[in-house]
Length: 284
Image (tube, rainbow, N blue to C red; front, side):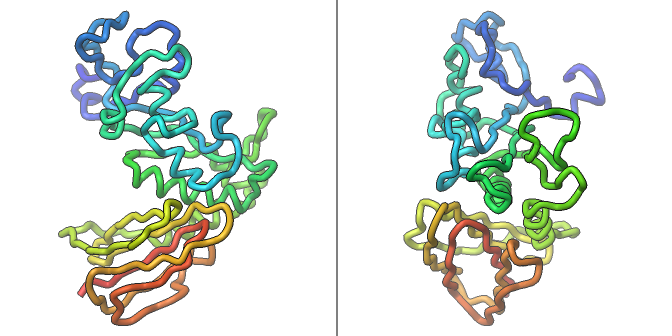
């Protein structure tokens, strides 16, 4: 790849499920470092970016729980599913050692398969909420790309065929509707000219509440605050750090139009449970 004048411009992602290697050839590394005594020599370069299939539900974490998507995106040993640690930290098959936890946090990484199948306690609503949280958690926790299995349910094989955003007849599930709403609210065809700063805080932020700050090309901040609770909710105060002309509040489980608009505000109260709120903050 790197010797080709055209292909050398593109990053190489590693094979998936490198944690299944049966001989320690060093696939847990992007580049085999010194002193690791793998069967392939030190300095061997396999890839520029680690690639895993960190499905939300896994034998190591089989049922619904709080912070389900957040935990699946965790790059460290705290992740109980088949994630970055089990493939590039300590391999899941033979327990070959790879990167340290600190190294994993900074490791370039992408997901080429993840998703959530409907069945048992995972209803269509739970699937939809999990998948929205998954995209947000993956981006917040440093995954450069996330590909979901599956757009439309397969009809050419047996097994769990309820992964899709769409049913076999192309009817949209809630996951398709919610994601469409989320991406419509975030859509921006322009290019940002200068990054601004929103000095926001969430005092006493609960462990199941997460936040992600984005900015559109016109300068509007979009602060995403989402919850991954199974039951109940948390009252959360969002302090913006200054008074802003207007804040529009969106709920992608409802639609693409604001559900609230506040004028000249410096803080907002939110009830956060199992889905995201998007706060569009107009700059001064």
